[in-house]
Amino acid sequence: MSQDYQGFTLWFTGLSGSGKSTLAHHVEEALRARGIRKIEMLDGDVVRTNLSKGLGFSKEDRDTNIRRIGWVCEVLTRNDVVAIAAAISPYRAVRDEVREKVGRFVEVYVECPLDTVVARDVKGLYEKALAGEIKNFTGVSDPYEAPLNPEVVVHTGRESEEESMGKILRALEELGYLPHEM
Image (tube, rainbow, N blue to C red; front, side, top):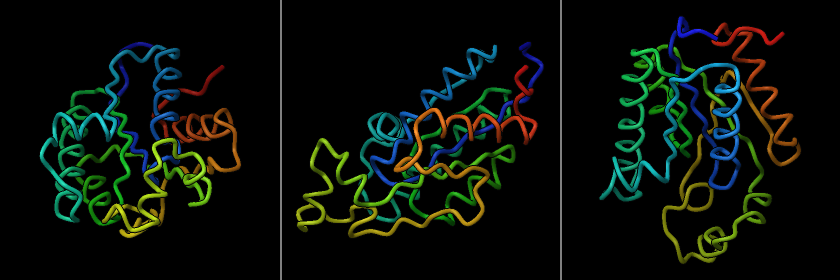
């Protein structure tokens, strides 16, 4: 694929442990395999240690973190880079605000039941949150507001990674962000 495509933002949202980062990295590989070279990955955990260092987990700090990621995505998209963001981004209003600013925005809701993300949690964070040891934990003691109209919904608790990836790539084709694969 030549460099004559327009940039866009692919925004993965969902609970911690739902598979956002894993899917985002696989989609990045698939886009590179299709010839797209200008791609930047913004993983929520990495952003928190660099761009958003010092922010806590209050609603205000979470909103600030998402606005920062959104601003970077807006700049990248405007410069014909594919920006892939994988961040919990628990509050719908801020995601919608980012969508409005970016314009070329594809929201991927990585839906996964709480019992599944708890079972996947190798760090034991959900267990601590459920025991009240961690405050403001999204999906336990802090809300997660699922998107109302995402472009893509994947169900990582019951779909394989390949099935979820296929849904995302087909949606990008149908929306005109990717040419249909031959």
